[in-house]
Amino acid sequence: MIRASNVVYSYLKYGRTGEEPVSVRALDHVDLEIERGSFISIIGHNGSGKSTLAKHFNGLLFPKEGTVWIDDLPTDGKGNLAQIRQKVCMVFQNPDNQIIGATVEEDIAFGLENMQVPTEQMQERIDRSLEAVGLTEKRNENPGCLSGGQKQKTAIAGAVAVSPQCLVLDEATAMLDPRARREVIRVARKLNEEEGITVILITHFMDEIIHSHRIFVMDHGVVVQSGTPKEIFADPGLLEQYHLELPPVTKLAFGLRQKGLPLELPVLEPEELLKQLLRIRKGGGAC
Ligand SMILES: Nc1ncnc2c1ncn2[C@@H]1O[C@H](COP(=O)(O)OP(=O)(O)OP(=O)(O)O)[C@@H](O)[C@H]1O
Ligand SMILES: [Mg+2]
Image 1: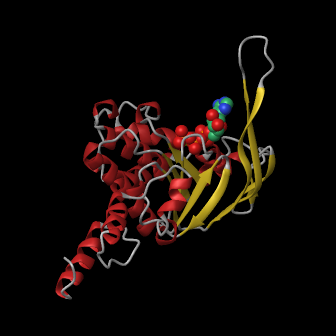
Image 2: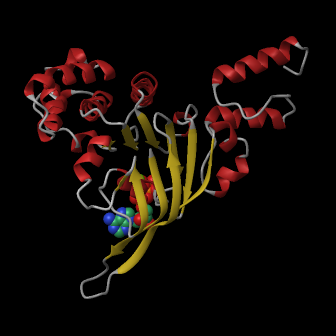
């Protein structure tokens, strides 16, 4: 559904007045494919190119070289933009920059008005998207008075109302407390599993990506690894090399194994670790 072929992107960085701008390469020959209906994650240290890549998926940026296709539409800025932006919606880090309506419902309606959705369809779409993110009861409230997590869910509802094929969450949980982070991820998983929306999650929180179908690791504008969570988290050295950490439970399990516990690695979830520890105890192991 989304395909990037040999994509190169550079920014012009301006220094002091009078100095020539320098070109900063943010994407360096990126190739990837994201299947429709999948939940994928993109990880990488600060400045590795994650947001630049994501912005190519809905035509906020266009490749300097190579091509990005959304289905069979190339994002070359030549007239496909409205279609592409309807197919791929983005939610960013700061909810306060994304919300404009006086009520939650009005905020969601804004995107639909922009798309010229007929008025008779609007209410149904608003109702559906509010339900999908669990905000039906907040529909008449001022979004400015909601919690950070509820604001992000409002932003997600606004995107969902547009009926996108794909939702890109670019560090959408970065400003939230742990509980709100979990809630937003739960909503993203539900949209993927129940509505079939492709989710592209960009995050620095490794525990958020353990349920992804596929993870892409970026470093210096290059996709350096891709695989399932079990594949990516099987080798702590690999992530370290790219200045990334294992999820806390995975790290703990590696530590316990080093101390001699016969755990099957990698372990991704607390329940999985508990199950293995109980099995070892039952079998008369070290635990
Ligand atoms: N508007 C810009 N002008 C100049 N350089 C930029 C601009 N935006 C990004 N860059 C540079 O492009 C590279 C990739 O940045 P990008 O924001 O895509 O990284 P990222 O992986 O999303 O980082 P983070 O985890 O901090 O969000 C970095 O070197 C960054 O400094
Ligand atoms: Mg970023």
